[in-house]
Image 1: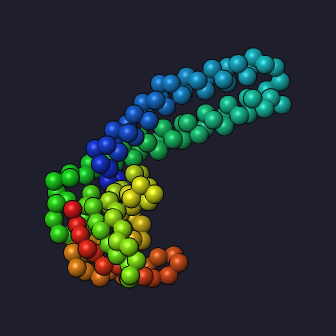
Image 2: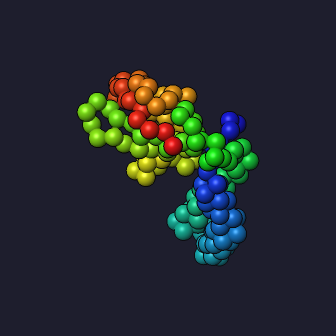
Image 3: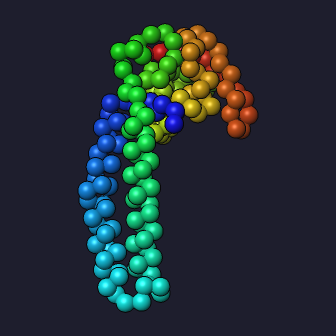
Length: 154
């Protein structure tokens, strides 16, 4: 599995979620399953099916988090202080005459465009990497290509 880039905050948040799922949520789902099994006809019991589905989801998420955290590389904010865009950098860009927009480049596990955090694997994030202030960068997006200018890198 490829390296997953995470901020310290993102790593800690995923670690907390994993701990919650392992300790609290697993127990809750096990109790639901136990209660549903005591309810009688398992084949026709909707509660039992719902509990089994929830158990599968929880176990899948636990596995996903374990894999992400095992392959995580913590982004060192001190290394992102340059003129070159890299994971962990805060980048201000402008497309044409639109208002400038600022994004932090993070790994996919922490991406949330509404909060200004874009993945280094997204079309925009991938296009910005390794460019510097003043560069005009072509972004090959699903809706078609566009060009942005890098105004600032922090």
